[in-house]
Length: 283
Length: 335
Ligand SMILES: [Mg+2]
Image (cartoon, rainbow over all chains, first blue to last red; front, side, top):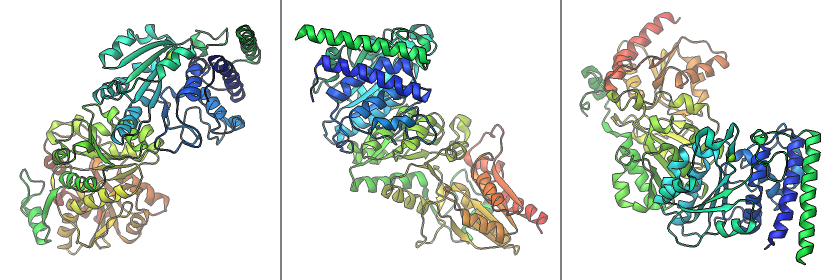
């Protein structure tokens, strides 16, 4: 089960390649945010979450709720890789009568909650975490949020209730790529200083490089019984891994042309080649 | 037995109720709270979730008796519904209790996405519904809830007319896993049904049989329709009175039978004239090709008059006198 950071890095490249493939195939998708949260999903599903296709209905499973539902394509490729369904099913993504909607739904194996409207996931996570406490189960609840999403006031209602109920079984992750559809989040409606806000709401705050597998891993497993919900502010780059998409707002839901897709694949192949060399250097 | 203070019923209406042998029961809200406590005592998976609303929800005794089974979230209705969905997703049987006005407007997106679309079977309890808050004004009225919630897939909508209906429906909701909205008022209500009456979500209850006028009523307006029918009976007019406690799914066969068998139909509801029981019944009749003199007795699309719930009902003709007058004039136009 335990993959090395190097193996995770190779997997992230494959995930990014798969995600782009299906977005190009469907002609739709949230490309930039999917690329920014891919390493987070990789660490969650390959290192952190105690859930599998076999245990998905177990009351003891860890829960993952993707509040930033628009980045569903990233989740689809990771769930397919983890065996929740065959990746070929993504041929139908966003197509007529497909179960693979452009936002997460429970019709897809492995998905806990239907999201897409922003500012919903954290409240649902709070509810599941309270249930876990009441039933004395040791599952954890992970909620992934975007930074633009944090302008939704319901998040802060949920944040207040999470610390009120001392939910140290709840871990929120902010995909802090500093961009949203219009541009820089700080220009649209600034949420800074984000760490201070969560601290003021009673949370245990950890800021990490959201593309560093080691830092993510360390932050995503909370120390037990802190009596505080944890937030991991993952500093990421929107469009990570594809040169011309990196840190560019217009790729929020941009679909690459054939030529752009070719460049993107080359970028990923280059990164893979470099990884191969660095692996060689280590050995 | 006597009409409550600030009466909802004129002396004549109260006399008619007494002539029919109706006994004054409790407010549905109180019956809800007592029933929920019984259910929750027997099953620790049952939770009441509140938004600083335990007092108005009559859940003080519940909180005292079962402190581990009440989840308080403060004045935050969006979070209330989202948390309720999360609790339900983890196997809890959740009753989310909040004033109907806030529960179904401020938290509408959570109701739509986190409960109905995600199919996490929360029981949404709208307290002090309709114009129960009276003179507190339109911020506190819920005259939009049937319309808003009827349009949401995978959500049932129920408004019990009396204590028996309230008790039975709360019990039924505990045995099925279906997202449901149930609204209650806070005024004491007459008991309308015989002890052996069967109450089932989705099936209307026929209180009287008749073929001249049919009143199809929901929630706390049913008593007024029953009294109007009784008043008309004294002039030889027969009234069929249906308690259409379930707004969705509608009891279509009962509505079509009324349209076919009665000379005229009037729907009655504590809701806007738009999008509620009346328009639902009209659509059912039209689509079945049934043409019958038809009116919707509800709150018109205007700035609602100020006053108590009783004042507002009387002002808009949701009373024995108002409904009987309306029915008589409609029947004059019927063949
Ligand atoms: Mg962002």
